[in-house]
Figure (cartoon, rainbow, N blue to C red):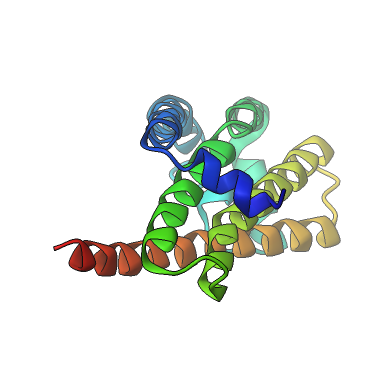
Length: 179
């Protein structure tokens, strides 16, 4: 059985709501409790995960300003960020699958669009691994590792933005088709 067939079987309101609620809970914990503490320690500098991109100098400056306590908090945030990509990735995948299967016949090339949030999720995990390695290696940061982390961050955001854009556009068409 193909991966797409497995995804289609999971595409129910129940699973979508489960992953959506999990996304909201983890986001509230991360952004409501841990992230503000990191922002306070960094003087308002955003963490790498939330930036569209960054340089070696950006990473070095952030980690220096954060200090040991801030880097430790960032590591704690990274642990929570093990759940978040799965939660939002599955929410978007299930929503996109539901809309795509409603609008297009089976086998249509648009079915491949349901894999965009999954790619974003994979890039998010790769980003998290490289950022964790950067935190662990500080102050001996590798310019190559920073570049790789930055690429994963940019790819993650590109996939998320593309998936959300497609979802909004296709949902609008599906809603119009429903009426």
